Length: 221
Image 1: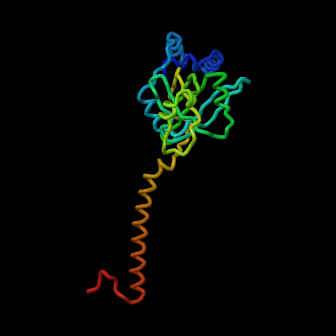
Image 2: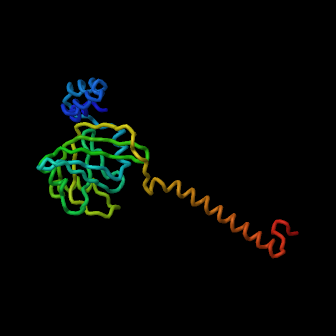
Image 3: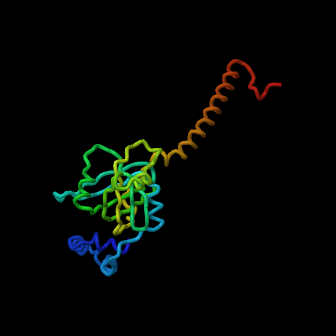
């Protein structure tokens, strides 16, 4: 757990539940450290490498009615990038044109991100402040975050100043695998299947010759 994370996540209500269940003593020292530091957390190479392998994440924002809104954001692998140790950015592709996250961010810039690696049962949680950047405001930034090989319209960029992050434990994460992750295993299985099918066809041919009263090729003079 990072230094800053408990200061944001462990509210009075959360601490009351922790006391009820006896986990408040486990997190007491972390709360003290978090309270002594007002500086935001700095992302490391571990977080940058993790995000570079992701092709999607969950983004939470809060609307003016007070309701949270969670949206899946997807794209080519690595579309969400660590721009510097305190900043994450990504190209926002055109979707269903509801613009709920975009509108929420305009009124309340607080966001939370959960990025999942289901195959390895890892998840990264991030608290931050987001801002929307249009192509008119910064065309170079939009170009740098885009991907020419991905067939989608980039409507804007989302830039998040990171406040805190935390790596969650793997409990209760059901492993899931993408086609790309499964392809090396499937390729080997296809190769082995092709060999077995060739051997099976050869054996059938030998049995056919024996049934016809002919000698197998290996015994011919």
